[in-house]
Length: 118
Length: 359
Length: 159
Image (cartoon, rainbow over all chains, first blue to last red):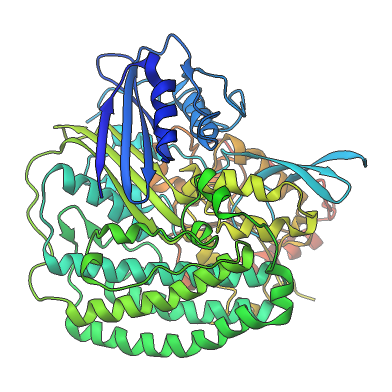
């Protein structure tokens, strides 16, 4: 099994995704993480056979993130999840729930890191 | 063109003990679209990393789901062990493999039972669950718990399972195999069962790859991929073939699950034959610092555990991508164009674990 | 005729991890077989005498639990099965969990355990049927109390 992680910039996301798709990868998951210094990291994992490849970029969350759901069709599920839990805007999703996928009592609960209590 | 109407499916629905919610758009008796929504069991447990330290998170991870509980605990531990460069003792690796496969058996047998219940074969349901109790007995003997047993921890296993008990396991497995033969024969050959399963929810191999499916859903459409072949725990030392079916429908998925139960028995037998003696845990010093993504094969398919930590008692992020979550696009795809009466069968075909999905 | 001869059970998963749910289901299968006591697992709240809730409640399931409870005919008994249903358990600190079932509807019997064991659950059901008979007796003796079917308002219990 091979595992590669590539840091990219937000602007090149669609180009990178296209290239990865052309190589025959499938989407495994998309994961957002809050960064201590501010903003978010978004990690995309792809798989081909047993190999794994990830790309990651940093965003300040002010601009909407480009959707890759027209390149990898199941991406709408993960992108809606990121929108609902992190409050990040994702544009051009194939299927946009507009915040209705997760019904949470707190809006965008993952957007801020809580201060350590212990 | 008939009248369009929207029928809500769930949250309280007899086919599943769990609250799944789908909005079904119907045109007379045909489903034209299905829109899932999440949140009835969403607890937000990934957020608990702020409140529970990295050792306590094992218990939280195990409670992502009560059916594949062991796998979730293991996946989280495996990710943290990789970050902290902990070498787990060989015996612990083998024990993990044994528990993993027992979990797979109990999960698949549970599913066979629920599926039988969904198409109205009550006695098959009861019989499957009767056999499943024998697996729970093994869990109880070894750990004290029936469904959630917290035996895995960072650095190894919480307690050893003596060799005499493992030999007892072998005897129980012989029993289970005998009982299963009848259940599986009925499940795969009965005319009435075939009538409900064959040709329902067809997805071609190209479609399942495109939709990002995993687990028996993938293998039921003829794609040979099983994350266990990555060789985590002791799977490297064990020989097994990937079960696939070329039927590409609900029958194919049932066949894969039924055969995987038998395969698990063979894996456990091999593991018990090869298990070395020795300690089952190592001392864990310090706090994790780094990131890692573990991929494991849960009964329902590939699960990913992403852990990010920065050298503190509390980890920064735990992200679990569960197999049911990955299979939702495929579920909505198979629901389009099906009969309303087939909806429960198609929902069950992904072996939905809503508490996994919503976390 | 005593109701305890054949109490019907309605199970709802408020936000459980599934562990308790499968144990509730397991108690109806051959090993434990509560059906031999006349207990039947039903999907319809209007048929049910005992409501078994697993898992803590959140804002989504609050309404569903209330609705199921109000649809059940009197007398009725509520069992909170598992530690999460009792007080929130390990998920108490989660942002999307409000706490135990008793934050929404009155709970008569608390069954602890993570996950709840079928033996404990059966014990809870046995206690519930006794309570069911008592409640029925009380209803008979109480002249002003009529048997409601369907529209009994759920009383909210403040913590």
